[in-house]
Image (tube, rainbow, N blue to C red; front, side, top):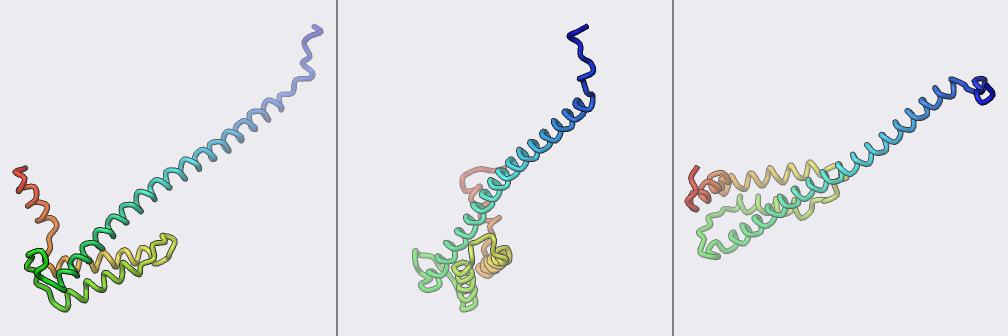
Length: 146
């Protein structure tokens, strides 16, 4: 037959085509995976940074309030008992928050966050503040019992 030209068909071309297709698919998959991982990492990092910012903001607000109460214990009708030790620890935590580098690329970022958490926990202990007990009292005051 004149239309059949089996001499021009090379089986190596088929193998090369398959190998080329597999290589292109592998590269495309890597690219898609890299983009998806980058986006997922970005969203996770954003969520974590918002969580840390909220936590440090809560600490900062509480510390400022407690420092005001240290200066004038009868503000708002509260009976706020304090000592020089409590005031010193409050000022230490306040200075840690104010002077902290908020750049996550900073090598001391995690160390600073940990130190702020430890000092804040010490403040709560000195002021005899128990978050779990407060949460339970709030639930029970609304008439909710579980």
